[in-house]
Length: 107
DNA sequence: GCAATGACGCTCT
DNA sequence: CAGAGCGCCATTG
Image 1 (cartoon, rainbow, N blue to C red):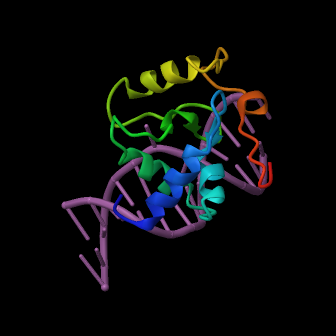
Image 2: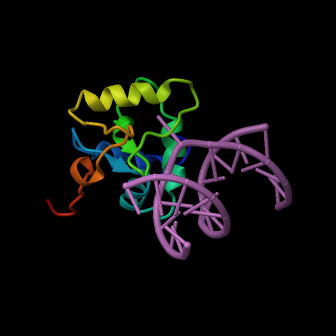
């Protein structure tokens, strides 16, 4: 990580439970960086393949997977999500109402 | 320091 | 719910 900002983001992404997904803005807000949704995606972009951060549980506010730098990269994210019982609709989108992570500050 | 870029979000229609 | 336009700000060159 090149700065504390990234570390804050990774810390939140790791808190995402299995079978749930969170949006960039949500992660940013939980990381104490409201409005830095873009930086969240930017931070995940800097992640390595062997990272311990469940980056695949992070999607955009539309509930869809964002295009990655590499071609076919989003395909891997979807594969990982399906492995956690996360379903996609005909529009290749996830129902945030069902799979959206509902973070609670005190359990 | 300046200019350009980017795994995005929100509001209005 | 879906589509189009504007804003946000750290990172990079």
